[in-house]
Image (spheres, one colour):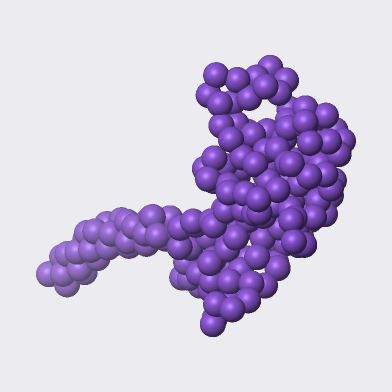
Length: 210
């Protein structure tokens, strides 16, 4: 009788072990699976989001003349420069890069950037009828509060004398458009009033705001 009781207890223990051990293994497997699905580190923290760089092309045809000495036009048939691809045609009735009455001779545009992005630079695609007339400054300025001044946050005075067609990137910057409106200026310098500068595209280098 005593031997039968011991044998019964032994068989019962084996049966319990055969149930508990696989269940414990499945529980551990499921635990690791949840870590993989949540993409968490060993401390259970979500990894930090990586900032993503991109470029946003803006409407370059919206660039307006900064003063009466600058003349802008558009011809969808031919720009009259190089192969003739259309773009914003810029001319000037005076030479040099100084506006009538003083200041910079520019074309200018207000920028629209979606929330959550920083501006890190500007890309300008252009072609020159003659390298004696060129873009001599790419500038970004942010309107302050109160709106009586604009702070210059990018001032790239590289002379863009490559006749092109070519795309160039400005010097880097970091501007948060959420803190104030941003203006883009392209300062132009004319060696002859018969020359043309054709802007074919303008893009903003953007970075997601951390």
